Length: 221
Image (cartoon, rainbow, N blue to C red; front, side, top):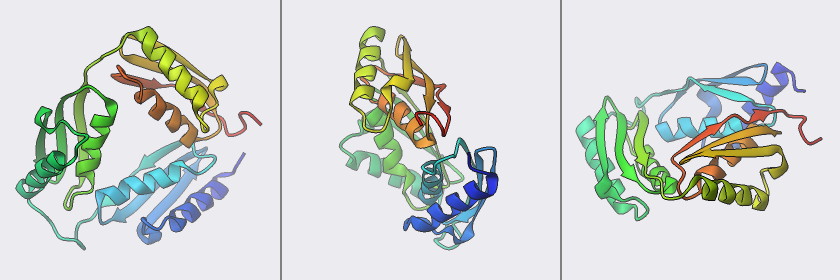
């Protein structure tokens, strides 16, 4: 098992390796597998990318992202300008049923509301606005409308796990209640845990995923 200093070093190295992240102003601490990111970046999307990069490091069990978005270098935008840009971005994304989504902005933080049928539509809406200039944060309150039975959802998720090159299907269990999937088991990395959750969200009819999978770096070895 990695020590705290080794894990801290690995995360710092991975951040420096990622070309879309400027690691110069990002700090990293590690304690018992929990990594905390601090510092500042110029955009919300870079803040999210720093977290994504840290999660793919072997031995990371959880992330506390305390990085701040500092728009000083890129310039502020009014909430009205951000809202207008968000509405247009949603309209231009073919994966998003923009007529079902409402946008509100307060102090650079965008809130999305409405109802869609698929998780990929919800994710596409987030993707459409998170990279907009001036965005400091994003709250996605878009609801999902269930379209399949619990038994169908469970079967489809289990089949997807067996097809996956990342998730060890023998170590992950699925329970379903209505449109909710509950995942249990243990995996080797935080990225594998996230992939299992992403796979579950891709099933038609899913409205909620509870991920209780434990990260055990030695699992499967």
